[in-house]
Image 1 (cartoon, rainbow, N blue to C red):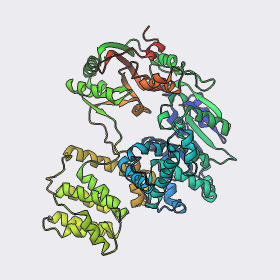
Image 2 (tube, one colour):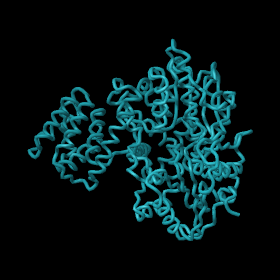
Image 3 (cartoon, rainbow, N blue to C red):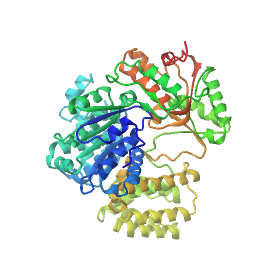
Image 4 (cartoon, rainbow, N blue to C red):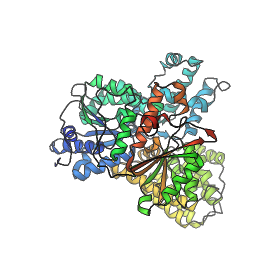
Length: 634
């Protein structure tokens, strides 16, 4: 393998043999390249071996990118690697071994908070606490306990330490919630990880098998792990060989609200006695941006000992790579940014992105872009499809997977009404099913076929439902039949959400997600339940619109890079946030806000424009302290 394109530190990391290694990789340092080269080299150097290499990351996009890169270098690598997110890995583990916990392989993943709240409401009712607690208010506490891997037995004492009132009652609800999930063959994102830990801790044979299959474990963006994810990782590393390859950056920990912690990186180093290789070289940003990034992050006291400052690889091109602009108001600021982007050539406009600390700020810039003739778009996770076609298709596949799921039956009926204008009563279908084998899917198809209003094309689809889906679980052929139905039915939808453009977008998203899942597992290995589980783990967010200007929160922009970055509304109470200011200058919260700013400015490849205003949301605001720390204002 040719490593001549790597710098000395990158080469050392790629050539690392056995034992634990921590690669402290700054932004734009080529960390993904290092990780993929490392995996490819392990495969290339062991052609006669059959073991696999496990790579864990936090987004399906990152996992797919690494998989493509490795397979490009080593075409036969697909049989030797598993590149996955933590949640996807745990879902696969529970599909295979969840029966030890009372789970069937076709468990449902609850990706929507409304579904989680419905289960939580049942738990609250069972504990006789409906008058005292609401599901919406308790769900964040449940999620936090899961992310901390708190067992039901320890929940009361943990809640007491956290200062929660009624800790004993809350612990009872938490225990009931986890029991309801298992009893109903359901899991949410937090319990996917938590139940995988229970499985690995209590069934040593399963862990031993995993250690044999995956003797080498690689993790990207380790700094983003919460406690539960770290505990899963512990179970996957052989305590004797400790072949753990970690890529992380303590200057980019911006998910403390989601359980990430600077202490976890130190805990990792202490526990595994890790050798550290640093990658301070930055190949992304102009040197002027690197200079202010170093000035900013040096103010954080909790950085790794001996952490090197970033080193700019690019040469300065002169003026224009760094601009700072002050405005009288946020409205004026948004207008100027939009006009500045609009004044550029089409090629340069497509390299621009607007970043802000909060969604509320971005809401001012979308209409400003529109007024300048540009299309701005927000990146927001989308857990469910919204068009009636894909709400129907997704829910009927879920119903095929869980034949007595009344909620999915309700969704099938609702979406079918939106498409055909035919109202099928859920109670009537349940009654019909109860007189037979209790199969809601068959009962729905029979009920629909009896309606005289049904067209010939829809009758054919109902026949396909019975033959391909209900009888044979041939979901791929059924999806093809459904797409044909969507194309040919006379759409006079009753649903106010109907949008032909949205339909085409969701169709593209469906196909893209299907392709991703097939690529990860192999088409022949994807069953209906694994297909649905992977669908529920992935965002249904559509691809960016043509010539759209991305408007991202800083958290959403992590891991991305843009030619021209506009970092906006850099004032006190925004960046840093009001909550961080309240905690104090030396607080963990303030240090995380500083890291947020560091992450934002290091997204820039060619230029960085920082803007701020005297008035934001109608209130007088001071310039952000970070502008002073970067030496941009006096």
